[in-house]
Image 1 (cartoon, rainbow, N blue to C red):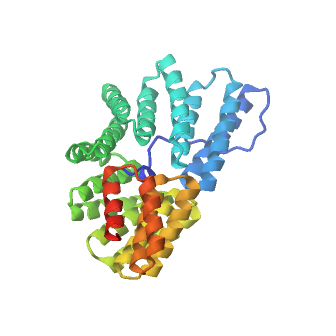
Image 2 (image 1 turned 180 degrees about the horizontal axis):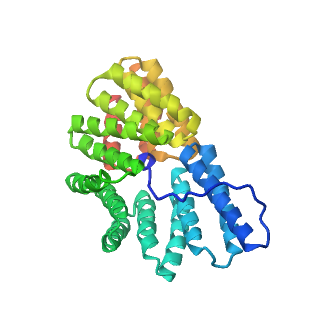
Image 3 (image 1 turned 120 degrees about the vertical axis):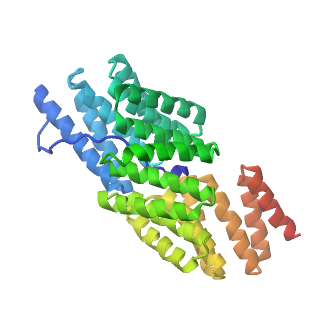
Length: 365
């Protein structure tokens, strides 16, 4: 699953917000910690970049309060660490997420907190898979699955199955990924966790799409979109709308695709997710190029290039440079096209992209 599209799922801790000032009194300090945690959870639900950064600050404040309690209400510090790790994943920083999940894992193992061991291993698995450590991630998801089945927790079991599916997808085992995702859906359909259902439906759509079972993918995406809207998850909605646009492009329904991609552009703007915006701009550029609106396509790819360079996302930058070169070549700007192709070739990491870019250069002589 594309790293920027993954929306890791975890449980949430619901507390009532109470305006308090921290003091030396344990009860007041605990209330302050709960208050900070609840504010952090609200920020994660909102999903914008600013809200996520605020959430990180609230979680860190909560941990400071909890450290003063010297182990009282110990389960809350694990919840805060897990949510803090997830916030870092949502912000596109899996390495910081790994650090927080590892802290949480040490605590739950020391306390033999079997219920949270499964969740924490699953969260760590998502972060490691994002970092390309698929073998370690698969092992953690399998351990989480075994643990959840031993405890008879169907939600944790479903989320662990979904995690195993994501690893299989990343490794190219598409049929196996479908088996895990469908097994997860059997459990999720019996539960009320709509965010988990939405994410697994999206994951099913990616696998079906890569297997060219496009109408099955379309059905999954439409179901996921409705669920994201029901739970008010704007980032999930935006990502699903973008994937719908990409799928309609593949189905050669270009005007419908353009409508979805433009909706995604409007949804992503307030979220401040530059990673997702850069990928979206490349998709829109490709679509306008297919519609023979080359100047407009060039503008979108240039926007994608600027964002990709700003956030250091090399794959987006490479794709943007190649497609900028193609637009420039179509517009007769051959010298500029050559320079764009050469820059893309210097960035390319896979043999497939190198072959594609080299062919374009050879075609220009």
